[in-house]
Length: 100
Image (cartoon, rainbow, N blue to C red; front, side, top):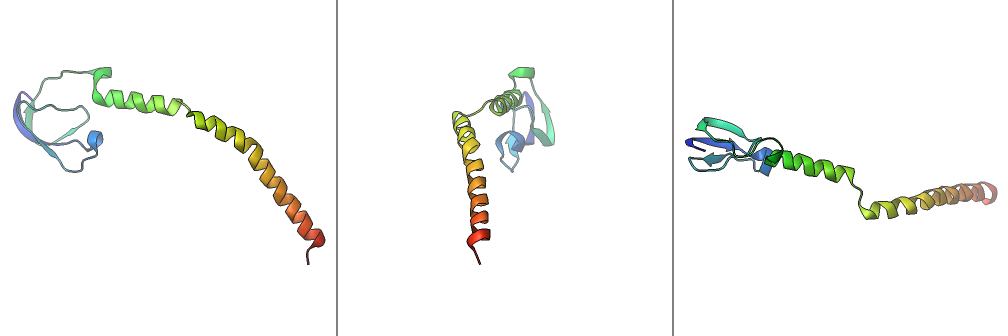
């Protein structure tokens, strides 16, 4: 902030529900909202260098990757689910034949 004073809503970045007071010399983050007041500011980072762009990139990378445990869970469920269904069918047939 080069000059001015305002309350800034940083909830998109920090999750903090209350506005933060910003004055001359304070840093601002892209993606935050000016609630009241006027500010003159200088952009030090733009495009892919911004905090918001880095967050978006990290989320995208996390969604594209698989945890090693997911492979194990897939292999176990490949055998476990059909086995449970087979046991249920056998139990139903046994109950139908030998039951009341």
